[in-house]
Image 1 (cartoon, rainbow, N blue to C red):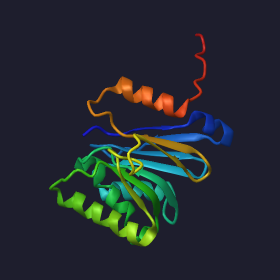
Image 2 (spheres, one colour):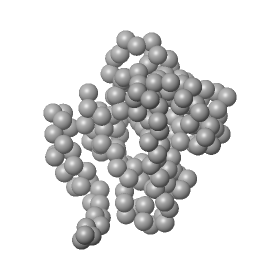
Image 3 (cartoon, one colour):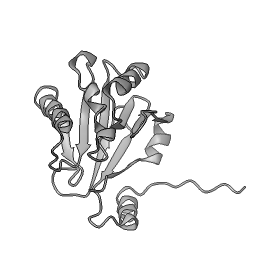
Image 4 (cartoon, rainbow, N blue to C red):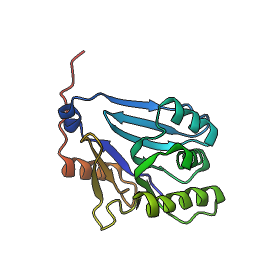
Length: 184
């Protein structure tokens, strides 16, 4: 299943006068990315190791904080396993939105992560969405205003993986301001 497209609204970034920080976390095999803009925080994937991802949660001072959006790009262990650490009760991390494709999967470790997400839905107002229907009501693009006012646009994958159509849908829906290229 294709992963969703996600982009921060550049015009909103300029209006908040906040610095956008993107950290690619070295989790070994797999991926984990941390994005911060002022008080807004987004995590994409968590790598394969709970211990490694936990050290990043500690070093980024994310315990006792709110993460606006967590996105699981796809259901491979080296992308989701570390995310389980974020849901440890002792970390007191509040997650507002969690996106993944929710396709059936036999992996026990993924089932554990999903159980944690479902528990947070019941007790902590987490919103759990399928990337195939990011707004849960049909539109292929969902906009979330994050802490601090930045906007995050989540696009459902285009059914046949047509990147040109996905980009066109994003540009039509968000009307981003594109900075002119500097000449060299």
